[in-house]
Image (cartoon, rainbow, N blue to C red; front, side, top):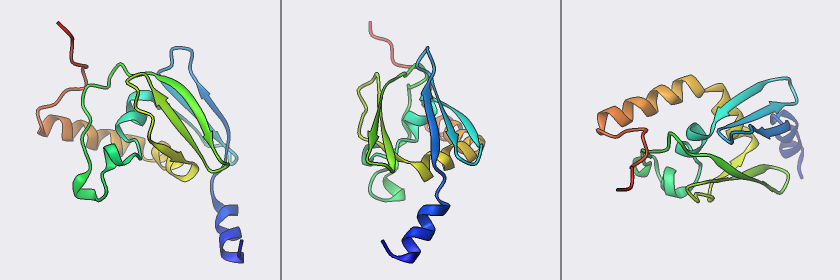
Length: 132
């Protein structure tokens, strides 16, 4: 690892604890600088860094409806740089790097407002589809 990589790694926020709530609807991320974020499962699911959600370019990004009741059923480490979250809708392809997880916490209000606006503009709902 070169000097630049070491400097960047030293500046990367590092989680000291990741905790899923008992109801499985919130992931609390505590970082080494004291920042703490309670991230709802729905928010994490609809902002998943997976290609399924983000696409391969900004124009391919999808608005994911119907995830209001989604739960986190697994948290799997990926090396020492990320975590893979498994949701009860079986989505498990998003790798949440520490920097992305931190950004999701810092930008939660703005990103959530944008998501709600996208749902409304597309006539979609947070409510899951009900089986008949």
